[in-house]
Amino acid sequence: MDSRLKFRDDGTFKIVQLTDLHIGTNDGNEADARTFKLISEIIQKEMPDLIAITGDLIWSEADGAGQSYRRVLDHISQWDIPFAIVYGNHDSEANITREELHEIQEGYQHSLSKVGPQEIHGVGNYSLAIQSNDGKETEALLYFLDSGDYAPKHIGTYEWIHSNQVSWFVSESHKYAKLPALAFFHMPLPEYNEVWKRGKVSGNKLEQVCCPVINSGLFTAMLETGNIMGTFVGHDHDNDYCGELHGISLCYGRITGYNVYGELERGARVIQLYEGEHRFESWLLLDNGERTSHYIHNHQVEEPN
Image (cartoon, rainbow, N blue to C red):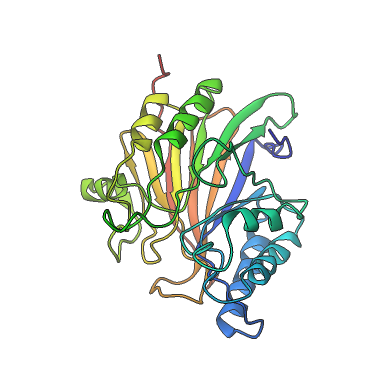
């Protein structure tokens, strides 16, 4: 595991989640320019310890997808802050593969993303450790999962996190069973529907939850392993809510990119962890400079058997 992440002296660790940037190939695109400007302002205001990008960084349908991806990586690299990425359904929809995207990314020294085990589905299934402020112990884990793109036509909608990915997550979790953890991927789980219906949520739901129709059991696995405090996704541009379901917080980021649909003001989600605690706080930072939708997770789960 990469050991570049560690808690600050005050016991905090801050993550900025960017999502659904949808950067195109035209350097003169006004919408993309607004997106890059917003990213700069967010990073400068929050100065996180990690930048996590949860998919759909680019429009791959146009020629020059590799160039678009380099534009994103060049921009987020200028602050010398580690970053980690998972891919969305549009990143490799045409003209470039996930493997090719990752090959580009490997040339950036601040990238912590990994291809992940070859024997399981997807590109970008990996975990990152956050060390104690003295660097001596692992205090928290971050999981990144490739939630795929589109389901076969006879099933419809979107791909699901496959069973071998779930098995890999369970195996990894057992190695660090007592440590608090978060998970990042692009597609919301079917349980994002359930948490909204239960009413224990804060934030906006302005469109349907565009999740897979197949439930492959990741939420159950997270519940049984007992270490995941929250999950963070993108994909649905007009949803930004967080809610707790059976002790796990299911959260959307806030759409960051302007070159795509969405009625919500652009921004980012900020997540703050606390060393030695099963707790995190989160808020949204908007393009108008407002910090809003403050959310606290402090659910103490039972240790797994």
